[in-house]
Length: 244
Image 1: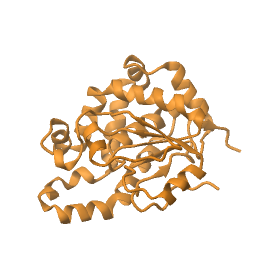
Image 2: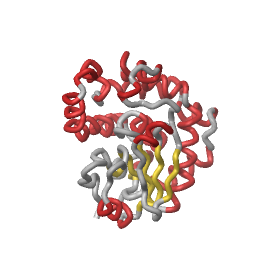
Image 3: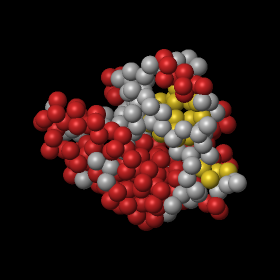
Image 4: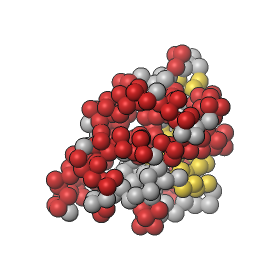
């Protein structure tokens, strides 16, 4: 059985990236690649659901500071890989940092900053995912599963030939899944309410990011930043299947 989103208590933005069409009429495979928010507080029962669904590798895109504050604490049956996309702590308790101020100015500006300033880390993440898919299911995540995770997910979908509409729709889903938690946070910490736009996953944010990918020729850009053309081919081979 294919399940899009498990009903987890803490990892509320966890979902399977399968089930959408990519290049040449092929389908992105189910139970291969997942995106999520952090796993801090995940229960044993929830870890067992992931294990029983073939997930083997957890890739954490957060900064060292964020990991130290709220570690995933994965059971030993999972391979945990720490691969920070950005070295800075991208959370509200670090709102004064340059990276977070870019987000405060505009979310698309924050995304542009990550892609342009940290392209090497995105390229490394692509290589890492391609290398680990043969082991079983792979999950990558950041804190809320929206920004760093959303950028990497959109890059992967773009490499797989997924439509603009499906990429944008996938991105927009994060706000819906995160809304209850985001609203509680804003109520508990009203000093951050002026930054509420940062928690939104507006379609325009992703449209602007996809325009940037076109400007850069994202596949060529990532190869120039260290992604392996062979591993991008491997990524497609692992994730795209015939639609029957």
